[in-house]
Image 1 (cartoon, rainbow, N blue to C red):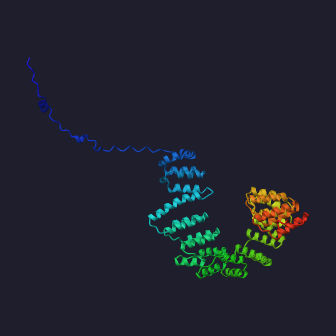
Image 2 (image 1 turned 135 degrees about the vertical axis):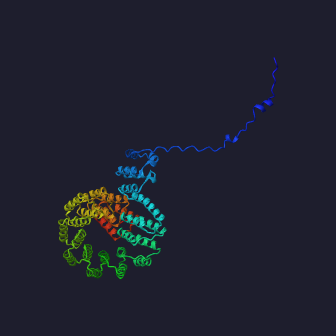
Length: 534
């Protein structure tokens, strides 16, 4: 057997296995791979209005926030319509969804539903968001008009939200926007109507960066800013001046109005007449009446009401009768204010029969009496000791759903106590509490006096403590009445304690106090006040 030839390993590897060139880049870990294809979008979740309403009613806000990107404006509107009887739920729903899903229709529906709530706060909050968007659009379009802000001011005025107006005007000032004259008129009219004259002047002063001493400066500054005041502006300022008691300044403004070529309206004349009526200046009043008639402006029922009231206050009964005749001749028919003025005025003049004649005439014409009417009638009937009729009137008042006010209640207390009907007065106090009408010092004084005169001194003391418990500080009349009653029935010791309490509470005794104390002691057989009190 032939021996095998052993091959050289070197030769073997070189000849039969040539070196392999390896491209290491293909295996590098840094090689960029092509991006994977994007995942398919998640399927849109379909939510029915019924399911969404059920979720809202269960207050599952976390789920609603999660699903809100899937809500369409149509679904949101449908859900809001379902929730219209639950305004607070509807508002919570709006607050927990994506704002980008809300369209103008959605916002309007939400505002209308929020407006069903007693407070306008929620609706205004939504409106403010809406107005913010409007302001932003105004800026993007480079619009110089103040219309967006004017609309907001008018909204607040109509809602009687006068406390918001300064904020809107401050916002306008920051943006360098001057409101229209109609907006000024609307604002001023709102302040005057709500008897907020101080706010009106402060706001004007803030707008023009100066303090005003009067209406004339307001007008002059407006003209200097090329804002031409109209008849409404003058009328509002004159009304403001008259209500502020600045009648002479209002008169100067009236002249300036005429010099501007503007004709005063019946309302402006009535403001001037009312101002001079309150001062009792008959000559000025009738000069404005003559001026009205020369210009063909006939006095209206408000004019006659002011004139009749002034004449009755001055005791000019014949002239008041003449004014009523003139009123009817001019086909100006009396209203409830006319009758209340006549009834009250003739009662004060002691002409009870004539006053009741007007009361019956009022009822025959179908004019419903007001609290003022009932108070006047109750006061007179009580003075005539006709408490059964008073009870009947009170029953009618409550049956008609008219809640007596404090003045009416006090007239009733005076009547019951003056006629010795203390139990009725005490029952009335409970009725007053039931109706949530808070008594005042005059209320308690009347009942305390009635209790003392009826010998119910313990009840009078209980009422004094009740006053203190309500935070009502007893006055001089209450203490004097109770001191005299206590002296008569319980002796000088208790009366003197009341006198000390009175002094500690910061109420200085007067001559009536000591006279009450002396009378009480004398009627009880005691001779003098203790030396400690003297």
